[in-house]
Length: 185
Image (cartoon, rainbow, N blue to C red):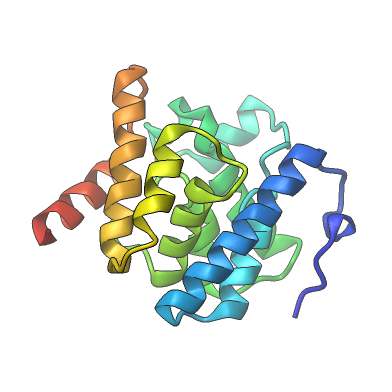
């Protein structure tokens, strides 16, 4: 098992980022227990989900990384998740695609998300450091029994409403995930 503390990262991260990561680890641990999902994989994905959040990458490198995704290059707030997946693979030698995909899709979602990715997507939204109303509403609903995909849909709905209300670009992964989940419920 990875030994996790602030020295876990190769470079310094801010105290705010570290507290957020700890919150995501705790939230994801609780969700993994609730839904009987591999706790070790969830821990690794949660610990690494924001590994690239405070990294600055030049535009040329970004264009190489996102060359086939015309939407992604226009949505800087989600870049860290895709770059983080690459860093987890290269620096931390993570080869498990469930973990890598959980890191990669924790911001946009994806219609083919695995259970670990769903947990990280939700935990990133509901971790205790998040104080806005939408997160509090989801945490309250989690006190009841809800299937994982219904919680995922609820979190995605909150994110999509925010993006629409703020005239932001929505990645097709999120739209396709929404359509897949809405067709089920």
